[in-house]
Length: 368
Image (tube, rainbow, N blue to C red; front, side):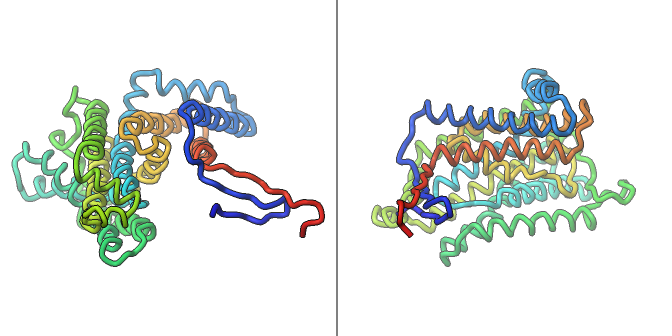
């Protein structure tokens, strides 16, 4: 039965739409974006700012090569985390912990760099492959904790994945304030800067090009896994109905463990892209919520890996636009973040209306 909410105006009924056409989906997305920018224009006007100039700055992010490259760079961790979430969500595993898995990827990458710089472990050519491997493994292991709790004990994954975000963030804070603090950093809570051989400058010497290649390869891997492999098929069947999966001979527990590990691993590589491509070192608050943004991206893209790449670049552009608005128009950081939040919120509202039908049943005359 669809949920019903009693109000003074009548009974509100929320029903999931059985299906909707592509034209309707595109129209609702465009309408939500239009409403978002209308609300942003009203906010800017109330602040005494020119909304037309602000929109020129925002859309200029996608037309100026330097800003577009920065948008792509900002989109890398969002895209990789969202690709991981697409696997988890297909399995009906509601992973809210991509942020923590991103932080664990940053820890793993930084640890490899420090082991080489301080103790001479490994050869230089081994550093980048080891960073990818360890960030994938540690991010996957972090997501495997709630995955094991669900598979073995039937624990709902939402709360464990969410709480582990804060644990990972606090571990990073401890490391950069303590044993991993740069001895030449004047006491600031920062790791040592990453050397050139540990940076994502592989393609054309720019992290943006390397990150774009990573995003495309990640999308191809996720698409191939879900569409052309037995584990991917099993992940989707478990997501549709664990009972049917068991009846078909699928080992549900193993599938949950595999899916959660792969989801966390991709987010972990997203963490690598932050310290190796965006910042160049580990510091507190290195992720401004990339993991949470990835949830919106995965939902907006309909869990389609290829669409996730495009939507991630759009959201990366919004992050870049926030900084551009601060520099070009003197908009406070809080106001720029509010603009981003309004756009995100309106997109979510559009997605809700797209997927659900809301009706109001007014009480009849004389009905109590």
